[in-house]
Image (cartoon, rainbow over all chains, first blue to last red):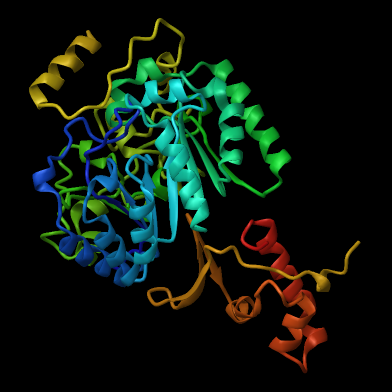
Length: 371
Length: 87
């Protein structure tokens, strides 16, 4: 067997703790306790192995990575390993002092989340008075000369503000803007009905994105992550299972994608216990859906199988109970009609804010909502 | 229209040029982006400093072969500019 091509990127989820309570969060419903988080020393070992394996970029994410008091030490270890290191943050806690320490550690770029262009609505969606901190964080990042990315997760409650969000990103001097329609995993899946946009909202937003791209002419890079529930085409999730990137969660669990912990029987390896090279090249979890051999019909004979890789395994599991089925987002999937039914307008329920919780209480909530 | 040789290309402040040991290629790293540099791509970008014109870069790179390589270097730099990797 030839070794798989090396990974390009590592998503390092340093903690699941977060001051925000966004109902679209893709973190798992059962958040990892702080006492189980990897130490800075363990992260340093992960970064060294990742760099040796071929990883070039790492994203220090969470939860809110600034809640790690040793974040500067972790960032320095990533930079020293030779990785292009980006902080992915809500902005809450990014004081001048902490940013300077991160810049001193060699941090390369910052991605800042924004929930809405209107401060009040943004705070409401985040479940925390965070907007002022975001504005200040953006200004600090630009003052220090770091590239700034603004990330907005889009859904029913903010899609209509797309123009205002772009105006905000330009005013905050963002170098890149990621407009990502909600992917329904973790808390986002729990809140799917509350977050589901309408076709009209999406069509209007898509036109606005096109106009902004023309207006800004490449001065600001705009990424528009299409909502796969509406496109009829599955997303090439993670660029293929175990093909481009890997995720290490707060306790060291290592996954082909951030949502893959939900796939049953995966036996996800842990980077604190196993060499990262073994995990990437040889672990059963990373080989489970690698390549095209595992594919069912209609993927098996499809021309697009090496472009979209049959879509997302986690979504196939979430919607059909079988991770090896064709992603229902594909119009050729036998399960596509059930997915379309989920996009029909109804009375959306109230979103459930993301909070640490015990599995029992959560089960209760889930039961109540699915009844 | 301006002569493409008069443009003074500049790398974004965030750009990092380095060798990728695992893939045995040179790369330019930017946020969320990797540009794989083939042939003399890295040598060209090492000369990009925001003050040299494209023609000066070409002359420095290969003083004896300016005419042979000029077209290739210009199209390489233009492509990077179109992709937002050069200013």
